[in-house]
Image (cartoon, rainbow, N blue to C red):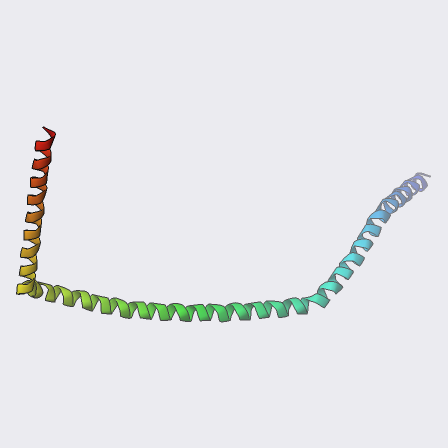
Length: 135
């Protein structure tokens, strides 16, 4: 008798568990159908996505190689111009002291000094006249 009651309790627990598991199994079945549809659509569009990615990487690679070439061209031109400018500056440094000792530069220096002296003389003369007129 105890055995029959125990079996009856076990069977009723099992029935209750099966009843509670039915909605879970139904949800899992619906989700698996949705996943199958999603997987099918991904399998159809995946080759197109891969082709687009290959096109994009090809374009990026060609653009980066073109930019790299342009940068190298600019760098080599910059190096050449830097060397040329350095040579010009060095030559000017060597030539400048010799050129400044030429008579024409002495004449120009003296003319500038005379012009400054004349300007100061005229300013003082005019300021003196203004000061006398103000008194």
